[in-house]
Image 1 (tube, rainbow, N blue to C red):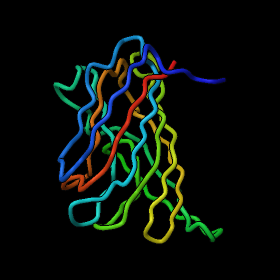
Image 2 (image 1 turned 60 degrees about the vertical axis):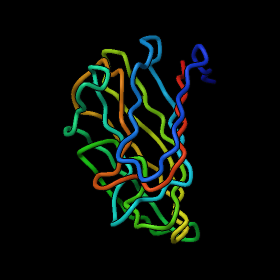
Image 3 (image 1 turned 120 degrees about the vertical axis):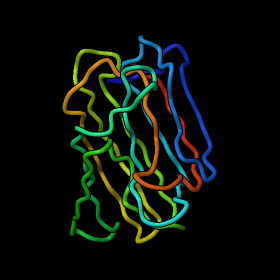
Image 4 (image 1 turned 30 degrees about the horizontal axis):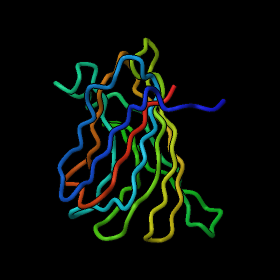
Length: 166
């Protein structure tokens, strides 16, 4: 089933040593979104790129109760590894400073009485890693905002585009 952009709703942001990207005021008619990110790097250390949900338009964010993970492998390997996260929905690998990560994530059931779920994919230039991800928030409904952040530190660089889908 094809999904169309709802009423032209979209959001974009460019990160440059940015602590967090807040996506608020998601119209109540939007239940699914596509998050795309490109050329994402971290400011320092080794961190996960993740997303945290809000049901009060960003006044506060839910920081626990997620079951999220990513399976990944080098492009030329059949050996898979896993990373998991319980403090947010994992968007990208646990990456180190320098190399870039690019990918997407679909969020389903925002602004509904169902549990928010996610699926996505990522490519990281260091090690030529490809990953598939999925997860959900174990409780809570009616999500109308989210934020994108690293689990520690700042987003060094990155371009983020979000589209409302039906």
